[in-house]
Image (tube, helix red, strand yellow):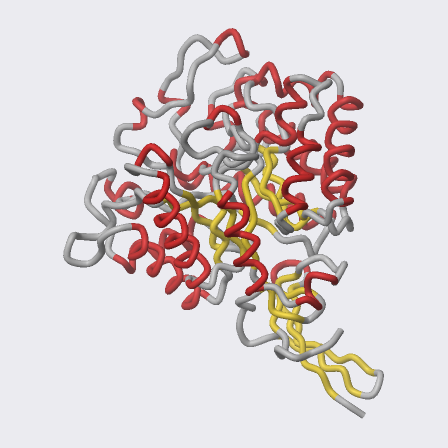
Length: 414
């Protein structure tokens, strides 16, 4: 007879402590939320990449399958996962889903099959550009805050269809709402940061105050997204896709002021912006991040990262660094850039982040600065490979089970 103790998330965010004893399972509520990922009962931490353009290039040009070469390169370096955009960026591109869903799903099917064949997991960011659906539906951005809007109804339809089609697939590591939406919330100067206009791509010719989002409207949209995913696949991991909160996000909401937040306020907003139903505290952080707290409290990105990690530990919620990186244009030489990247990679891993993804792989738009590809900052892929070897045990890397949010004894076997 033997006993094994596990904690795994189930529907509604409830955790069950599962006790196996001589062939019988019992369950009881867990006293606290889990704080790590595991795979085949092994603690799991991994560094991946953003492959933003992997699916998007083919949405724009359905004949473009050049992502195959990109996935082959990721396989060469044993990159474990990639964060991707799952939809068109502009309203005119989003029409592929609404007007030709057969082709849209063919594109997604083939990309996921190619990633799966190379043992590359996918974090699927569904609504990367939050403006695409409201613009397509002829509604303002605040339509995200109304359950009865055309925007919310189309978003639910798409979420339901995607999750139903791919549920149970180990290639899907997590579903994500979108990209950095909370950076648009509660801004005193919101009129200067409204979504970009491009009428030729389907946007309106002008914006108004109805395009200025509040944090409450965004949280309403997040809640509906989480409910849609959970209704189809209760155990799927969920991410908001948020960046770091702005240095004054708490006070933006409280008083529409630019007063810097304290460290406690920063943690409060980080938890607010990744609400119940989402598994991670999601942040994006870059080497040039600064301006948080006060000059006496914190300096550069590493200080902000330490606070995010402390908040993660306090909240018992794993950290997902959905983007991190250094830009070539910020350094005087390739040697200086490489040194900066190595330091940031160590800091990211030392933060304890469950998952982290460097920006950005095979994205020609960022060529000469952030792009990583053959011969172009390819050293970063080697650095990721080296780091993952120290993080992922041989047993975990061979395991075909999808990652889970759980706690388990370090030596436990499934």
